[in-house]
Image 1 (cartoon, each protein chain N blue to C red):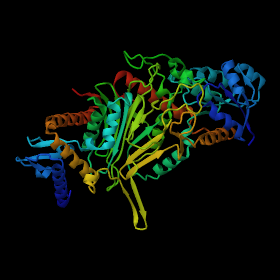
Image 2 (cartoon, rainbow over the protein chains, first blue to last red):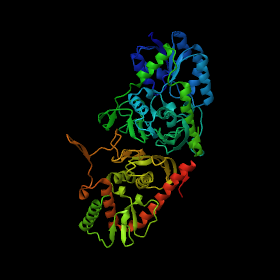
Image 3 (cartoon, rainbow over the protein chains, first blue to last red):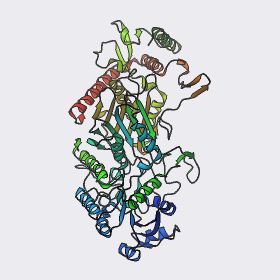
Image 4 (cartoon, each protein chain N blue to C red):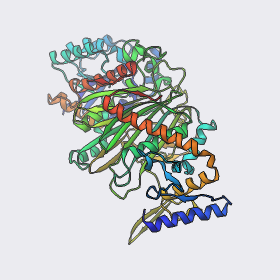
Length: 360
Length: 257
């Protein structure tokens, strides 16, 4: 396969660093350029020694690199629509971060742009390429549990907002696109942990093979007093096929307010968890998507911590992206598929606001 | 419970009361089918769901004697965890041992026991007698999820998780980075594998449920002033269970008065 000439559009997203090694290693891609939002981010990237040209201006990058065939769109959620409008007419393929937009008019415009210009647009939901998830899906497809009653999932992490340059995760406008109060009288706004964790909503749909019927969500008190977005939320409801669920997308693991991801960042032993519990009339299935791990209490804090051993999801995801571009295929996680996940996440916000379940 | 086991349980309770000099002026009954007007029936509370309580009935919450759960409560009440926000509870069992209302009874009581607040509202999604997912808020606005299932295979011990997340600190009765409880002893032999978790040397050899029941009965006899509180607790927990079913049926959040 002729390598795809790819650029990274912005370095703002929390997953940005996952692509550095992937784009270097994957022979289906040739990493030709990146853009950064400001000089500080540019300097930080250049200090890592990847030797890839970094621009502060998107137009300049595209002008200097007409060979660019695809981009990884790693910008803040609010900017995605403008970037779609600029890129799609160029015929450049897009790997979009996990939230294209929460504005459903913008979302439909994105779908139209992708269709009109016949490009590949894949959404970054890397759990589909996680080996534990593949096993879980395989087991469920063989109906090992019989008729499934409930699928409960967690996607709980630290809060990313203190890490450079991810502060936008704490901004209602940058993350949710606008400033909407979480509920009447609440000092918090949409754009927190729900907005950061589409994966678990997506997985429930995929595993249940059904769409959301209704959701009921509640926000708990915030763990972090200085946030203006929600950081603890629980969601329950039913899928259209009757399978019930509980989803926990909270930022409920503690962190120190370090500016970089570095040893000592995490406070809790386990900084992140994506677990599934599936109950059916033939039994119960439990899955931890990230492990087995190792454990230590070394420097700098001597806290006992879970040291993760994962992160190969990006390999499968990028392989699919390349295959779709070169062989004119539609990605499994395309904008149309993902739209129902975004709608469910919006429904959770509506449920928190109204105190009632929301039908989808 | 087999009748021989019942005899052993009564004998163990008598031995404890004798050892610690607790007065046994009442005739004691530990089993629902042994309730009589003359006996003090120290019963597992969930076995009285839907029954009219008699004067002699004492609905016990045996899990409150479990050291791990007491210590979970302690880290909340003594300030080891600062400002709890989120409680994540789960209990899965076999339908040969537990029904959903019985699991609700247990977990609702545990929530109030551990967090020290009463349940203020409940939203429930229930699948027959197979599974229930519940979101609860307490009088102090703490948020709690309770995941219940009766779909474990027959013969399996319940799988539980009780996790507390606070502004400062987390606590759980599960070992970090595990999905099920660990045992104290693993005996792996050519004849098969066995696991043991013994937590009470004075009641050594009883299964966990019976051991906790005997211990709870003993603690009641040492402090019989708690009867009124246990009866009132039973009524309120029963009310929350009814509210959960109403929530599921009407698909609304129910406020507990």
